[in-house]
Length: 143
Length: 378
Image (cartoon, rainbow over all chains, first blue to last red; front, top):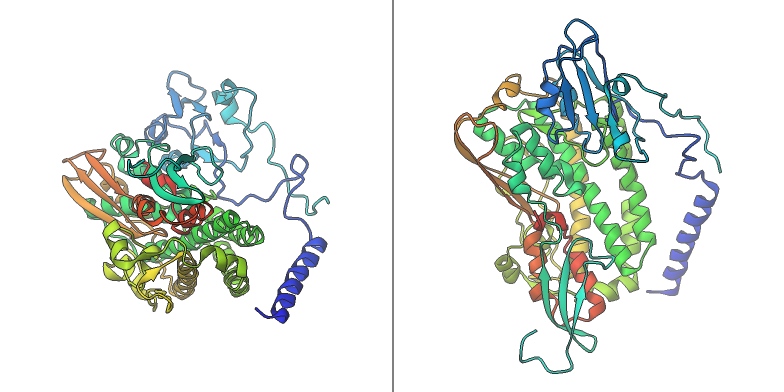
């Protein structure tokens, strides 16, 4: 390798370094801002009780037995209560695919960490509501 | 340790706690700085996947396969899905065939970019680790836009695919490919011309083509000896659309030692694989037909399968990946599923490839074969 080649390589690296120093960072200032999530993001579920017919197809489709159904717990005419265990869920989306009555959807809420395992077991009231909106993209990054 | 090795030999365990050894361990017998014996051990990563498959329905089975190797999720799940489709006699729509092929090739590129970064990290060239991984993020963004998940995509389903292409997915895929195309020649030049890289990889882990075939190597490892062995051409799958694109099997044969392959040749070979995949994707993106993405009767057909057996196969990033599936009549789950991962052969070929090299070269030989523990421990 000639000396000229070495100098060329060094210049190439320096060019990259200078460009990186003056460009905006790829990381996010997480608790205050979040990235944009695509429409199909498979985050935690939301259960719409009005549409549910208690057919149990979501329970049958689940490969890891993360969903439990209680057919005696009724709010509307023929619905059922769902219990989700997020310590088991692998977010494959088969339950949402199996639902033919538009009663089960994914939401873009993906940060589900909790202090203990028991808090990851969502009861019917919690799975029917989203306690907070997903963090919004604020358009600028902190430095 | 063999009894004829002298007293000065020392046995060293490489792994399972070593940074480069995540989920595997090899027992090395060392004399001075040279390795005289290598004894690879499997079993640290065992999840009894074949047994798990017997308790999962045919729609759920792809999820298990996909977790064999998360880096090539689109490719890894395909053999099982293909076997189910063959037994159920499903008709795959043309659109699903083309989209599957495109995403499988994108998955191959993403996997190779990860491997390339990891091998560079093992050699101590960290610039070449982080730069390709920035480009890889754009492919992960595409997967997320398409399926909603970055790694565990679960894209294929018996009878077709689960998620359709949108304009945004297409845009993101084109952006990822554009970035890769502009950066690849630069990175390739910087890495392959680097004297450090050449010193560490030339004539390291050298093997003959005959030995490679005897050990059961496949994919880029055997192609780098100059043997054009590729399932995409040799045994084309009717449910994939490789025949729509015009491409040649990438084969690299080093003129310095024809019929043999060292770590450097395998690196060049994998760069050629990336270039081939890019060309296939670019050709197929112009030929996506309109229509449905899944067989309308697939939902009913996949619930209960007739008795039969089938052999699903795909040319994975690391080599030939197959699943043999046997079902009983009106069964909801497989009677038996046998997985053939590509990396078991490459992992155990270390036994013959490593002796004679120095201890520091062991990681290079291992990394150059692109092994993934999930494929040999099932």
